[in-house]
Length: 118
Length: 114
Image 1: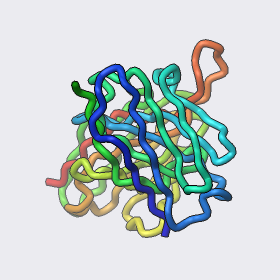
Image 2 (image 1 turned 30 degrees about the horizontal axis):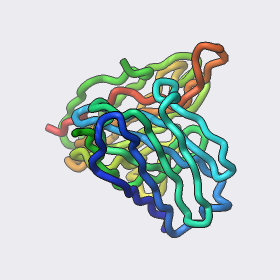
Image 3 (image 1 turned 90 degrees about the horizontal axis):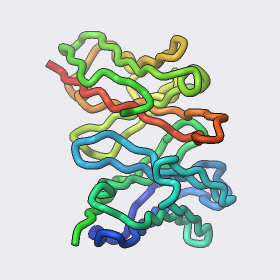
């Protein structure tokens, strides 16, 4: 059974870089034809798509975050990662990783709360 | 402002049939199938519908459909455990040099079971 688990610092200072990793267990990550996605949700608000990556390295990013986002994949560790630069309080949110195809997400991680504060 | 428009709230009684809607444009719902995601008490979202096909393990009281640029999630025989926030999502395709194709979400519908 495939599972996704987010990890990374829970507290980030303003202007610094938020870094999260999603570890995929129970599947054949290297060969899976999926899109590996990051989604976030500020407290009391809806879901926001950040971007996605394939194990080939092909990426798509949200237009509103594109200038600050970088995603990468490490097939040797069954992981994909998110870096978001120059963070502000507006980037405080629960961050989810998810698996999907071009249109849907079929598996979600449990989410991790990242707070931007000095 | 979300790219897809959902009702802010919908309510129904146990056993009732309720339909949630998700309105978009020809560049998103008009061109692609829609996913529906259930979020109970701010926990991790759970996928309840891929277009008109539910994932394995989703009760058959859940069904999905689409008409033009609007998608629908129908729950026939509402149960107390269906109380949750529901989000729709699909791909939005843009050929414009000034915008980019991206995954878009609705703002979410809070479903209350009375």
